[in-house]
Image 1: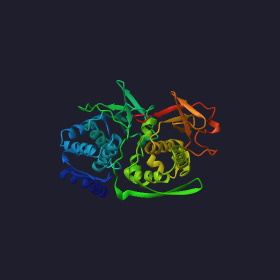
Image 2: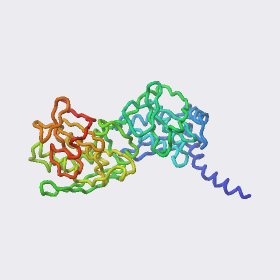
Image 3: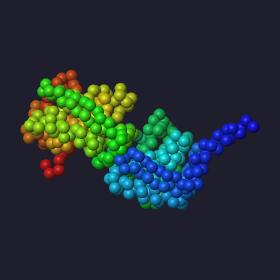
Image 4: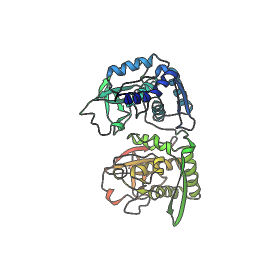
Amino acid sequence: MPGLPRILFTMLLMLPFAIANAQGQEVRVDFYKDPFTIKVDRSVLVNMQQQLSADVIKKNYNTVNTGNYQPIIDSLLAYKQKHQLNDWLYYQLVRRVAQQISPKETNYGAYTFYKWFMLNKSGYDARLALSHQKVIFYVYNNEDISDIPYFMVDGKQFVCLNYHDYAKADLNDDPPIPVNIPVAAANKAFSYKVTMMPDFKPEHDVEKQMSFEYDRKQYHFKIKLNTDQQKAFNNYPGVSFETYFNIPLSKETYGSLVPLLKKNMKGMDEHKGVDYLMRFTRYAFLYENDNENFGREKRLSPAETLASNYSDCDDRAALFFYLVKEIYNLPMIALLYPTHITMAVEFNKPIGDPIVYKGKTYSVCEPTPQLENLAIGQLSAKLKSTPYHVVYAYEPLGK
């Protein structure tokens, strides 16, 4: 009976799922500082077959939708509200709950189905589509998002949440076919804006030492970072510069860096302090462009720039903006050239060659290493005759 060992092996593989189905399933996600725990009722545990079709997905939806799923959604939304999670960080929690219920490596279709189900039942307009056994997961989003596929339905933009799992797929040549499952009250737009950073597990905090020289004095830093926070932005897409520049640091990272910067700048006037921040972002990190570093274009959030050994002009512009905003809260503009981005700051009196934008005068502050040792108000020679666009203008409230 040569087939018997294979049958027994298959039965053993299915045994944990059978036990989970019989008893329900305990889910615990240790990603943020406070663990998320929930007992998943057995009525919402489905053994979804690997060969997917619209009928298979609809059948499983009907099973879960008539099961006792509401405690999961209530717990997720309560956690979201308590910890003030923006949509992107809420989705990181949803992903990890889905991974606990049906591991991605075991059944990708079921894993994606549970993510889709939980987002829908949380009120977001999410859609599934199939393309030759690829399960494509979209969500309604009305923001300026680049580098991921999208489609339009009745004037609404739906962006792909799981394209990173099919990075080599051409969804234009092989367009996915939507799985039509209307979900009542699932009409909210998903936002990629991250305006608050939650506390992550302190066990995953790491310290990074860095230094740079300013006015012939060496400054040393021990910056507290968190590996989970970095993971939360692994698949973050290209967002608008306004959204990107305003991603905050965590309390731990902020507390290990910003007070020390303020201490180091004590006694400096505004111009000198901004110059110090400009040179910190310019020289405290090694430069490498994204194609060499990641093999693709990737904008790093300020915390990712602090954590990374290498960064490029986008990353440094965002970090410089964040630090100047936090310490001085000055008006700023971001100047985008064909192959470069830099910043300009409005002072009481402009320095060097001024940049005039909407009747206001700004001074260039170059946060990325150049061939020249540029001071405030100086632009790289290769950019002086190059056209640029102002892609973000920051005006502090009350100014």
